[in-house]
Image 1: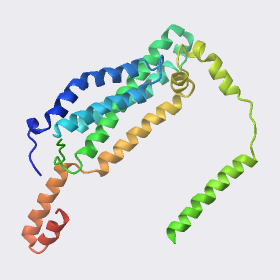
Image 2: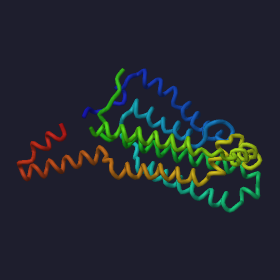
Image 3: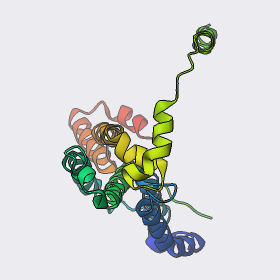
Image 4: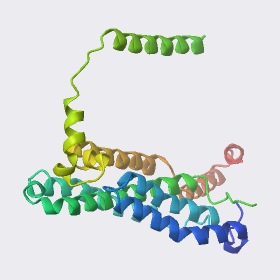
Length: 139
Length: 112
């Protein structure tokens, strides 16, 4: 199992991922927040957010992210996903106040997006580091 | 033989499902479809019918879809060991076989 030196990866990959990383983050949140205007939504944007974990793993395959913490945050968001429609939608608050509709849609999209992003991130990290940190990419 | 049997089973299921669906076709009045397509904007203030259906008409579907992801991740974290766990188990096994003596060759083969 070779030791990973962070500067040892391909400089092309490092530069490309460093360039694209903020745009991937921006695109993920764009897809999430515009879920009720354009195609997209929580699940799709969350998958885009999860690709951030893949990009980071490709250039820096070191297991320094605690997937248990990510899983705990994901569970918090999941409980919010379960609670928010019960409080807002099923009690009829949103139905009686139509001006809350857009806020409700955006909130649910953001909650689902972050939950799916963190969930897929946990899955990706667990599978990526399943066999240890020996897999590197060299161009 | 087993592969031929499973291929025949798949073919049989395909033929049965498509045949039964084709022979018992009932043309339903697409009430739900019409209602959702016509009224989703004033019902949910969403510009996107998919978001309107996912987050309003079929909210239970979305909630339990999110739960499915949690179930998958729970299974993964429970049954997929981490690299650190594998390493700890390997060291414990090496220590145990160093005490016992005669199991060391097996562990070498396992982790080669």
